[in-house]
Amino acid sequence: MRRDLPWRVVDPATGMRNPYFSLVSELMLQQTQVSRVLEKFGQFMERFPTAAALAVASEDEVLSAWTGLGYYRRARLLHAAAKVIVERHGGQVPSDLDALMALPGLGRYTAGAIASIAFGKAAPLVDTNVSRVILRVGGVDVAGDDKAGLAWVWEQAEVLAVAAHKQGVVAEVNEGLMELGALVCTSDNPACLVCPLRDVCKARAMGKQREIPRAKKQAARKPVVHTVLVLSTADGRTLVERRAGTGLWAGLWQAPTIEGAKPASEVELRGRVGVLGKVRLGTLRLRQDEDFVFQTTHRDVTFRVYRGEIAAEKMIAESATHTFLAKETIAELGMSSPMRRILLDGTQQTSGDAAGQESQRVKADGVKRAKVIQTKRKNGVKQRDD
DNA sequence: GTCCGGGGTC
DNA sequence: GACCCCGGAC
Image 1 (cartoon, chains in turn red, cyan, purple):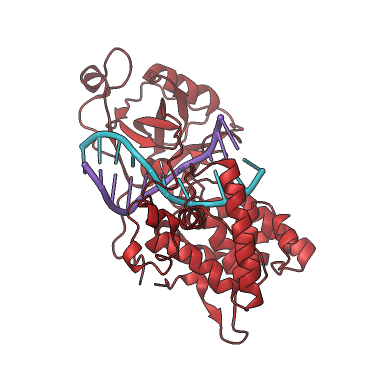
Image 2: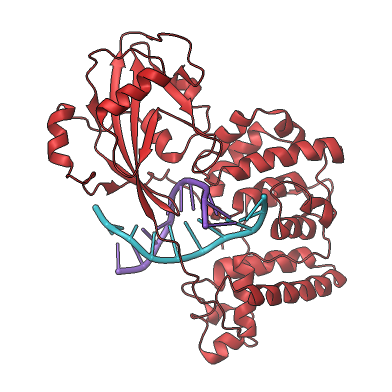
C-alpha cells in the first residue's frame, strides 16, 4: 500500500532520502494533490537539481517551472528558502526542526515531514490526511478546522512520533499515517475492511467514519470578469504585462487584462493598451473568442478574450510596463493556467466579427453563461502503484 | 456538460 | 481571510 513516488528515492550510498527532494516535493504537495505534483516534480528537479541551483535561479524561472501548480506564493517562498539554505546552512537542508520552521514557506507540517521522514527525527506531522485518521481512530466528532480538535490531534501525533522514534521507525510511522489517510482512510469512502486500525477505530465502532471529520464551510465564489487583449505582431510576438504583486496570480505574466465585475468594452480595452502599452492600434479589427470560466477558490473568473494582429510593433514610446515577446520566451514566464492556455494553446474558435457575436452572446448585465473550461489531461500519468 | 471539494502557510 | 488547480462525481 506504499506508493513509489519520485521524491522517495533513496540514495544507495547513504541509504538516505535526499532532503532537498523532500523539501521541494513537500512544498509542491501543500494544498496540492499527488497526481498534479507528479507531472511537475521531475521537470523542476531537472532544472533545479540542488538548493544551490535553485537559489541562483531568477524568480521568473522558478515561477515558470511552477506554472500549473497554483498557489504561486509557494514557489517564491521555496526560492527564498533555497537562498537561506545556501547562506546559512552551506547549501544543505537543515535537519533541525526549528531551523526548518525558520525557512520561508515551511510551517509545522512541512518542517515535521522533512525532519521525521528525511532525517528520522522525533517530530510529529499533521496534514489533513493524518488529521482525519487520528480524529477517526479517536472518535472525535469535530469539524476538520476545529481549533481545539486540531490541537488535540497534534498532541496525539507528538506522542506517536516520540514512541515511533524510540523504535527507530518514526519515518515509517509518519509516512504510513499519511499513506493510510490518502489511500485507505479516505474522506469520501473509507476502506475500513482493509484498514490495519479497524479494530481500534472508535469512529468505525460507532459507524461514524463517514461523518468524521465534519466538513468545514466553504467560501462562496465571487464572479469576476477578465477582459483580455492578445495583441500579436506578424512575426509572432505578443504584448504582455506583469500582474500586480499581490492578490490573485500575484506577479505572474499575462496579456493586457482589465478586471471588473462586468466585461470591459472593446473601446476600454483598446484605450488601456494604447495608453499603458503605448501601442497605436488604429482601426485594427479584433476578433473575440468564446468566453470561458476558470474557477479558483474564491472566484469564478470569466475570460473574455479579444485577439488582433498588427503588422509590426508599433510602440509609440518605450513602455515601462509592457513588452512584446516571442512565444518561446512567453512559454518561459510564470503564468496562470488559463493565461497559459490563452497565450500558448492558440486561438479558440473566433468565427465572425466581434460586433455581431457581441449581440448574440452577451446579455445586458454582462456575460452569458460561459462554459467552465478544464485543462486537458496529459495521458498516461501513473498515479499510484498500491 | 456542470460543479463540488481536496489540500498548509502567512 | 487570501491564495489555485483539477479530478471525478453527478
